[in-house]
Image 1 (cartoon, each protein chain N blue to C red):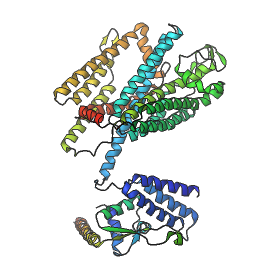
Image 2 (cartoon, chains in turn orange, cyan; image 1 turned 135 degrees about the horizontal axis):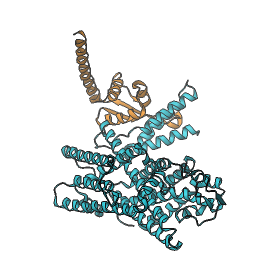
Image 3 (cartoon, rainbow over the protein chains, first blue to last red; image 1 turned 90 degrees about the vertical axis):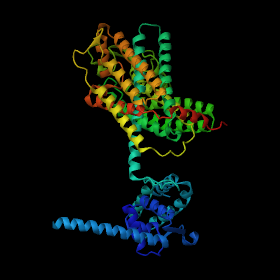
Image 4 (tube, chains in turn orange, green; image 1 turned 30 degrees about the vertical axis):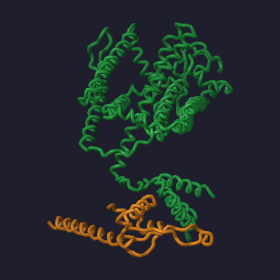
Length: 103
Length: 486
């Protein structure tokens, strides 16, 4: 799992049931559009994310419909699990660095 | 719609084309919606909105697309490997330009040697025959390269050849004997050739892939002549203005540049005294026409570009006959490492062979140093041995390569022997360096130029060092995979 994927999952986990659009996720994660969209597609293929078109009348709203992305239940559980494992690795690594410094 | 909006729309369309078919439509709609939101972001100045919109679309246009469903994800390692292969592939373009220039120089040298001794008609016929021979060599190599080259990338090859040719023409004129071969002459000529040839090669490949081979041949040949003629005019406008050559004669410049010099009178007669420095005058002392300078300069560029056109057309026609290859079979990691190792050893050996200086007082035959033929033979031998895998079929190939090596050595000796009288060998080698007889290899006078050439030839040797195990079977498969005609 790359850092960029972790950032997307962490951003979506802040509100696991919320629907997010691409620009919103770009602002939250700081990722460029060319990095974010391939990640969303891969997560959707893996069943971690689902997407739908915004239900509006583009003529009445004066803008095109947006694509919304949301974590699935399996995706939210998987993301929590992966982030927990990552945190464990990080704390272990930080502990080792701290011990080395003390020594 | 302003220029930024048009650029944004074009970038999104480009990005969507690169994505898998099942996703491109949906993603394009999603991106357009986000772009519209960025362009109407409230509370931001117009310049900031335009900047955000540009960043959004350029990132999509430049980033790698997601892989098609079912395909493995491309890692960073894969992308670095692709970039490495592209760089190695560029040496192919360098090799094509060097070979085209060397072959045209050979035609040029023979024309110079024969011209004063035989009637004009015979000299013309000899020149045409030699040029046809050089074009045949380039077409054959182009067809060989096309067997393993995707047709859709033929236009990329043209762009690479154009870039290399630009550098080659500039570097080749180290000693300024071609007064009108600066960037102001070379850039318009090579740019025109590259852009027009990309269009011609693209059309030719599409027609050939559709089974319309006659139309492809006519389009390729006709379009290439037009591209070369336009390129010749673009490369010569600056010189023609300086030399007072009639602009009305421009359509004939390309053809006249390929004919023996000293026959046209489309400029103004000029007399150069014997005291005038030759390089500044751009021609020999005596009375001559300024069009000779124009056409002499032009031939140094038009000749190699003509041979490059032949190469890319042959490549595109051959590549279009082969359908896209199926997904690659899993590669045996051990075999891949051995292949890479063999290529590296062969490439380094060739580069070192070319760079080792011939010691003073080295053996000679009839006054001709043996260093050159010996090196030619060793280079061919290294490549032949690298291709040998112990099979009987490869043993036959090694035999053929050995014959080729002996041929290369004998040819080198024969050329040396022919040039030997009146110390002509030294004079000829010196002229190779200062461009007074041939053009384009002036960079070999420097250590850096020699190193660059040795490395390039080493990489090319490494690419040829390991033939695919199924070279023959892939040829047979290619024949059966030909697309249906009509």
